[in-house]
Each structure stands twice: as structure tokens, then as C-alpha cells.
Length: 260
Image (cartoon, rainbow, N blue to C red; front, top):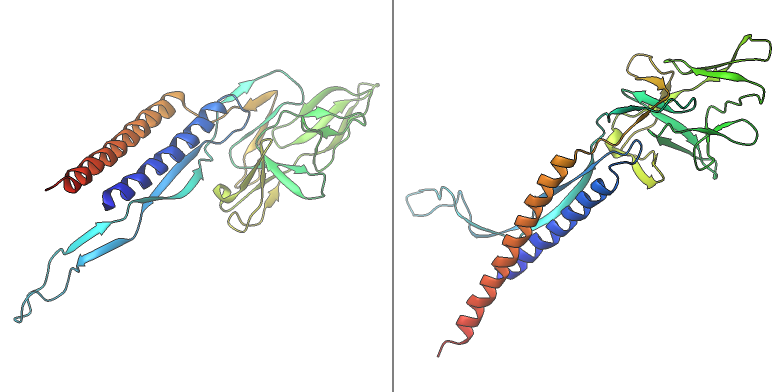
């Protein structure tokens, strides 16, 4: 029976849906994480009676026809790039983006990755880096004897030198994309540019179309526990209903095979 195969596609779809939800819940405390959502589409249809065809010699038209679907498929796991809540940390090199934009990160292979995770540190040379040691672009080096690191909302990095004079060290820039949902996640809170996302548009924080940055804060994940739990319950019920359809189809097949 076709119902067996149709319901099986539904069970596979809900398995993937639960996997996406579980990843969201697992990353509820991941800095800058952006939740995903599974989107589905129906499969091809078998036309047993095509709508719009003539049903008599007088030219009457079939209004609806007969179509039997083949089940469901996964269309995408879209990433929701909404702003997460900002948490105050009081750590000098913690920086959060408020609004549009990603920090630019220099990867070991020379490429550029992008992140919303602004939990930065200093390497042995004083350069501002991520917690994995990747340089934050453009490279800014903080002198060993510098004090009172200040990062303004427009990304300018300043310190006090030993003579208590203000010294400007550089300017943090951020990037935005026409289609930020098209970025490729590679783990470690990093994204890569793709054909779908479009090329990075780089500017200073606070420029038109860009968000600003807030020192001593981090952006939390945009995962809402109540929403994820309700989605999980709905996925479980859909999985259960598809399994019951398989059981019913199996019982119907058994009844047919037992006919004398």
C-alpha cells in the first residue's frame, strides 16, 4: 500500500525536525547562536483524474480531479537570524553587536569567517583574538602596558598609556550580507560567505544599515525554551500519527491477504 511509504516519509521528516529542535535546545547557552527551523514541502502527485479535462462530449469540465500525494520532503533548515538578548559580563574584551553585522575573523587558511560571538581575548603578542586564537579583523594589537581598554559603540579601540594619555589603537569593523540566512555554519560559532548570502559589505559599526557594538556585553542565543518545547511536542505527535498510519496500513494489508 502506498500509505506505508507516504507515512514513512512523514516519520523521516519528523525525525529530522526533532534533530533540529534538539540542536537548538543544546545551544541555548551558546554565545551568538542562531536557531534553525525545519521547513518541509509535499512530494510529487499522481494524477488519477486531471482537473480541467473534459468530462463529456458537451465540453463540461472536471472541477477538481483526483490527485494522490507521495508524502513529504525536507526543503531547508532555515536559520533565524533575529537578535538575541544581550548579557552584561563586565569583561573588557567582550563585545556584542546590536543590530545588523558580524565580526570578521581571520582563519588559519587565510580566509575570512564571520561571527556574532564577541567573547574576545588577547594572544601572547597582544592581538585581539577569538577564544580559539583566530585574529579579529582588522588586526588590533594592545600594548602590554596599556590600561583601561575602551571600545566605543562605533568600534574604536582606545587605551590609556603609562602617561595616562588616550591612545587610539584601531577600528573594529563589521560585515553584513544581503541574505544573512544564506551563510554556511561551520561550527565554533563561525559562518562562511556563500553564493546565497552574497558578498560581505564591510563598514564601521553605527554606519547606515549597520548595528553598533556594546562593550562588556555578549549576545546570547536567540532560542526560546517554551517555543522549542511546544515545537517538540508537535513533532512527537506528528511522528506518532504517522506511525499509527503505518500500523493501520499494515493491518489492512494483512486483512486483504487473509481473505479466503
